Each structure stands twice: as structure tokens, then as C-alpha cells.
Length: 121
Image (cartoon, rainbow, N blue to C red; front, top):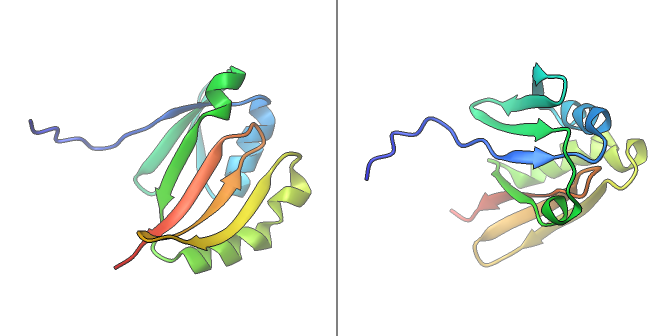
């Protein structure tokens, strides 16, 4: 089956919508307001919808993997943002080397876990 897809945009929730919007803007995403309780956040051709909706079991089990060209550079840029100093509950986990490549982790203010990775060449 041919999908001819142009993008995949997951929907994620937020415990505090305004705080999460600020967090994602600080993380470098561009915000496009869709309504008072939903925004599209983009980076290049990538995007996701942030909703003013919080179901603990859903949010606590949400993980997103974002592939980057250079995880070392991303990690340095991430540390320079001092997101844990600006946002309660935000955590950064340093780069780990796995058999498939390398990744670091970002926990957003609501608990969503972002895997930021670079595949081995």
C-alpha cells in the first residue's frame, strides 16, 4: 500500500497548557495557534499538536522520538537553554550510546518523554 504521506503529527497532552506552550517555544519549535486549547508546534517539516488536555496515564506513557543530525550539538544547545532551571519537572538526561546509535532525553513539564537521537551510520 502506498501512503504518499506528507507528515505524521501526534497529539500530546499538557498538564498546564500555557506553561507547555512556553516550554516548546523555548525548545525551538514554532507555535501555530489552532484554538484556545490547541496549538501546532513545528520544526521544519516536523510537527505535533499540543492540547490543553491531561490524562495522567496517557501523558505518563507518551514518548516521542526525534531524529537529529548531530546529537552532540543538540545536547550542547539543550544544556545552554537551562530548561530545568526555568520549568518545574523538566529533566534532561545525557547522551547514551546504544547498539543502534546515540540518544539523550528531555522530560517536558507534563512528563512527556522525548528521545532525541542520532542513528549510527
